Length: 45
Length: 293
Image (tube, rainbow over all chains, first blue to last red; front, side, top):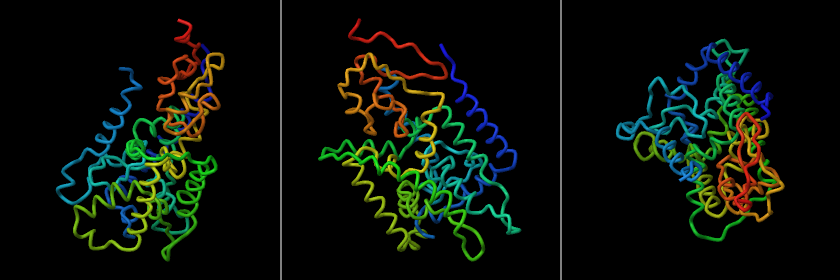
């Protein structure tokens, strides 16, 4: 069975990007937005 | 019963698990726990009262709308967490979350069961979701600024019917304060939701195929993901059973890993000749077909 390498490399690259984002504190930013009622989503503003 | 036949259970469980914080419905507010910064791989509005996770499309628009170098109070993060998350999921399984986990995709499949005349969606409309992604999720939030220099979440504000259903209508129902503030924008969004409701009855998954920016992101990975659909030409009889059963109208023998494929795997179950199978990481040898047995 032949193993496909390109998708594995792409996967690893994106995991590294995700970890970089987390280490920059982006989880806290997403959390801050997610726990606030999104007026745009509701259709108010 | 095979795993493929249990897809409805996966969709139901996913819907309930992603929106599991029921007490919010009685308090008239949204869940605000610390796990809510975790992105979910589906279009599930984080302003749905019981949502436990963050919609990646809402999150990424917020990054684009508020990342500014020239404003001291702006933030300098660019959404690497969300971009990495989307890329990691996409490179693993492509659009599989659309077919197995997305509550709005599930709703469209259920609505399509209503018996009425059905219409196929023209292929050119399927390119519209990339325009929505580029314009409403990336460019407009980045480039169009208010008087303070910040952008808006354009897709959430003007289009997202999942947000209208899960957040708008839900919060309007449980919160008198929010009900009192609804105006033109809410009406606009409700009309969009109604349009998609009608369309999903007569066509297969119209929102996923023509408008969903998250589907557009995952679609870009379908041909290169670790998970792949494999077809075996020598076994295919062109009976079109896969096309008939496909929830997104794909002729599997023409393009098994089409960007439209939501990896529901129904075609594998439908094909009685063993002409369709899946592969994960490694390429498989075809199984002998049922007819040959």
